[in-house]
Image (tube, rainbow over all chains, first blue to last red; front, side):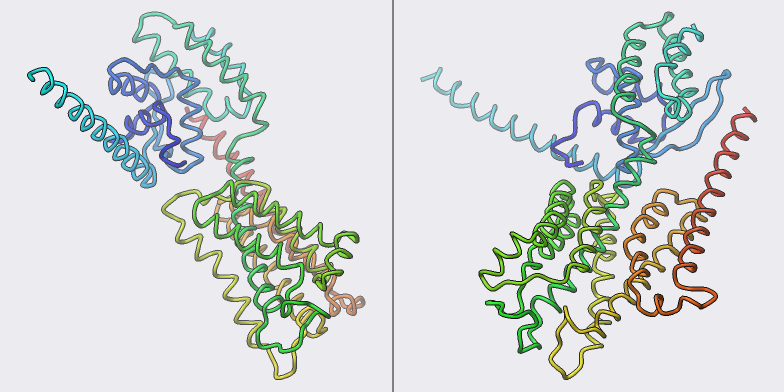
Length: 116
Length: 322
């Protein structure tokens, strides 16, 4: 997957797993927290993303446990997944920095013009 | 609530439910517990995802797409070896002052340069991570090899002084190129591209060294010389046997997708048994080449079946323990 093709939910799923392994519901909760409630992952969307990321070698299963009679399967980032997330985060940060720099340039002369 | 979720999960194909069914049920129950009620948007989302899977995927992605992509990765590496060998020894051959094909206007070049060059470019595209381009180039290699064998195109090229390599070589290139085009030849991890470049280069370098060492002082007609034909067939059989042995080892080790992909890729090479004059002449021998081949393939299949059955048994045992 080239970094320019990564969609926001995919990026958020990888980001949710960045600090350690998580099970499905924990990933959904973390994605909601990371996006300040703006992105709500549904179960079908989550499993489609996890299957795709696993096929691409970015995510792998990391154990299972039974809690209250419910199966929880954990997922974690692979090294390739961490590298992809890091590259994508750097790309987004660079874009955001550029946008902010241009906004500052735009606001600067406008403020000066108002005084003159 | 659990019964409702189970009913919705029935929309999914069985292979998906085997992989994710219990896990998805746990997630839905966790989610409902946190909200204090079932969310029907979750159920609709699951139903839509299940419908999409049923329409687009016949089986688990690891067994269908995974195997196809790995078949493609190995076939592109082998295509690189074949293409570069024939480009250097057949089409270029600077040590051969006489044209190896009659009347070629550019050195020894034939119309075979087109599929061979496309095959080499496919390998380059794979190493650069351009899987889609690699697939298209492999397809072009197969189609162009097929096209230059068509009598009208052959006659057209001949009118400009270009001949074509023997049909057997082109048919072989078509088989390997077609395997390369069955999937997207993308190495599973981007960090492994160096390793795959080495894997693609390995057979190429080995083929070059073996063929270069067989060069004699006589003018060398690569496409015509009977001794060289036998040598190439023997090398092909050796490689095919090596691939099937490696496939067996991988199946024993539990690497089903790579093992199957290697076994598929050994098929064109093992077909060369049928062309080997030593095998054809040994009809009365107790173990001929073909029966040896059947034994090796049978052993690989048997091993694969045992591995699959063992894994299924382990999975059922784990489930029953829960």
